[in-house]
Image 1 (cartoon, rainbow, N blue to C red):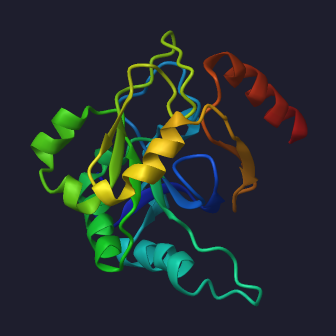
Image 2: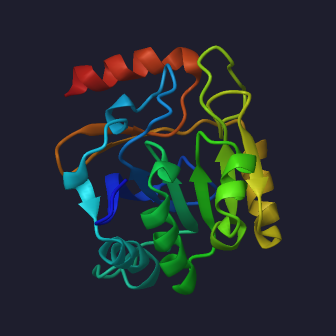
Length: 212
């Protein structure tokens, strides 16, 4: 849906709440699934003006893994990349091209959150397990709560495609500690990063709004 690049809602580092370890996070802009109760409804609409050329986006992401361009002391290196949304696979062509460039650049731990099922995605994109380490699939179901800190509703599943990361993902999914971040982006929006318990979403939104 974005021939000139990937429409991006947010690019942020460090992310400590979505995936094992400290990660780079990319949230895609635009979603056709539109789950009731979505915690990021502002990422649903497709805004072509937010399209970032894939090569430029890849360079920005790789800079976190390689040199940072920061003064000493050197910040911690990210453990991997998490892609969420919006819905990443509503922009499959630029998304997969981005993953190919990052894979060639040595970024092997890529976790993707998608509202589509793994079966559907693998039928459409059979090379996906070569480009990503793991997928959390399934739509968010507002009346299907879960105690698992890594997903929003109990129907969602983790698919691990790279066995070398089995240990870190096992430890991550076994932890029940929910960690949340509030960050401010370049447009001065306060954004929640993480997966709150379903009953806490409204209260957290009210808290964020009160601090703006």
